[in-house]
Length: 188
Ligand SMILES: [Zn+2]
Image 1 (spheres, rainbow, N blue to C red):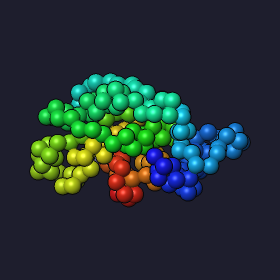
Image 2: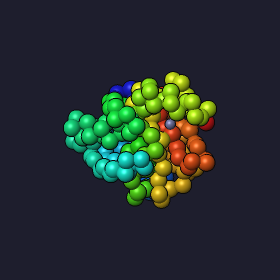
Image 3: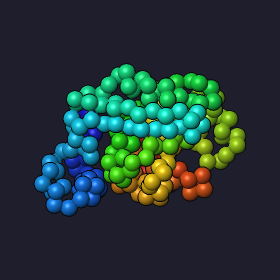
Image 4: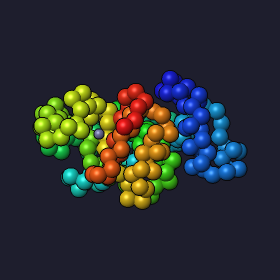
């Protein structure tokens, strides 16, 4: 927590994005140094619809300055490998990236999930069918998700994710989704 906050503090791009999200003079008045896009005590809420299971989930997963274990567990289940049913803990920092993307883009839509956690078995299977699937994919560690939004184009979502500078961002134009992960900052 401390290191991530320190990171954003020194990240002018994140600050700019925050300012743009709130808009103009109002933002200048409320922005204090050292804040994530979401304030440290602000509720963090995510809404999803899964493109494969068709399940929907809306959860506040952080409130009163703390993560909510039961809600995180529901998110882990929701983002399970839908092919095998295997669950894996999902990196909380990934949820924070999504929550900040929600704030930065101003979306009113749920995130459409194309892929969350992937078991080793599923990843090998996918790799046989596509050169775009990485062997050491962060999906295998619960540190990556592929998403799109109804009311924000995927190119704009990609741009917002790149500006956060909090991990990897991949843009897949054909299938129309954006991959975000909590690995090192990079883009493709
Ligand atoms: Zn991905």
